[in-house]
View 1: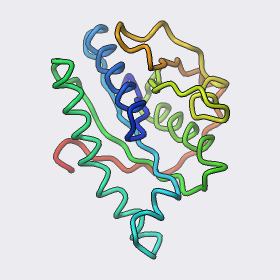
View 2 (view 1 turned 135 degrees about the vertical axis):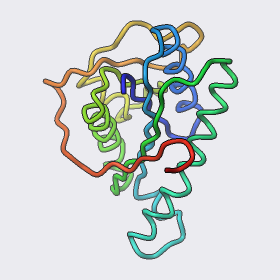
View 3 (view 1 turned 90 degrees about the vertical axis):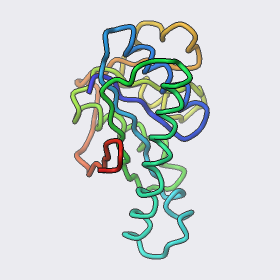
View 4 (view 1 turned 135 degrees about the horizontal axis):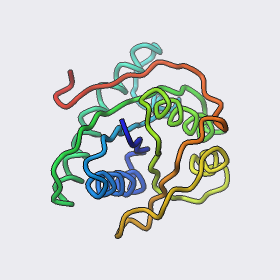
Length: 175
């Protein structure tokens, strides 16, 4: 994959996805990996008691939602679909640790997939995912025209401190 897109199921994630799709189109069809990181709060909202059941419920519920958002973004931009994949990572930490851990998980997916850039929706809050990644990545050229609410970062592997964790993924159709 050439680009990793952080998607939080909010407007910022949709902005990042649209920026990545436009960047892919502008640069000749870059491959795109859409990544959502599940936190402990997400797992607790599944209504399940056992940890494995929580993870399974969260993962099964997220893939269709993420692929739907991908389809909506492609349709809205009237682009052809680039090579794409969706990844769900599990980071079972509570709110205090979640922003740092989400940044680490995004970096790990990027390294594992050989991506050179990560696309984020900008929030600018202290302690945010973007702040953690900005300390470890370089700001790339401006995001594509019309995507001012996104941030494109170039990975600098010498500044990343990532650890191997499990990746859950599904291609379109849930396989």
